[in-house]
Length: 189
Image (tube, rainbow, N blue to C red; front, side, top):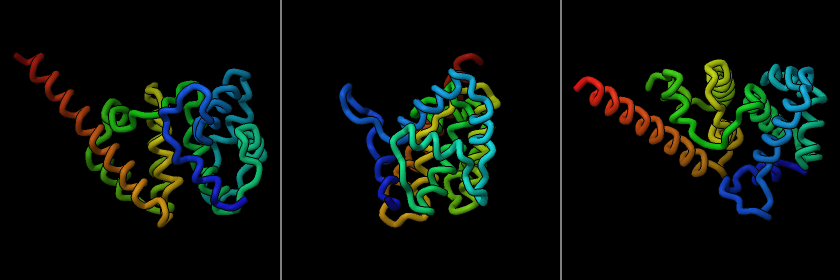
């Protein structure tokens, strides 16, 4: 199998009962199971994956349990980045809300711009650092948008979807900023 498996990541998060979950959701479920079974060694290996390293055996076991048995080299690299992001907080993953989470942890607009404009290795590093920062803050980790940024990076066939993710994150961040400003104004009066 080649990069075709990445198309599975684009499925909607609004799955109805009985519908097949997206690969991202299946991975999130498997990470939660690893956390529940206290598989600390596997989770640590998944957290430590970096962009130039060959993924550890724990990555391939996780992907197989999620139903992704064979992937091409480019696909493996992209999914390794996504799994490393999700492994930062396997006990508290949520599908959406990246903009709100970034506002809650005190992310500045400048940092948001850096994340949204980054491409290639810079994007992988910033997305992972962002996931680590959210995980350390105690907030739930909204994995879908961060993972989609990584999975869609430098893919011409996914450029529109990547832009949609960036727009959605920016808009939700600004909505959260407006709510915070409104709450501060109301408290001051």
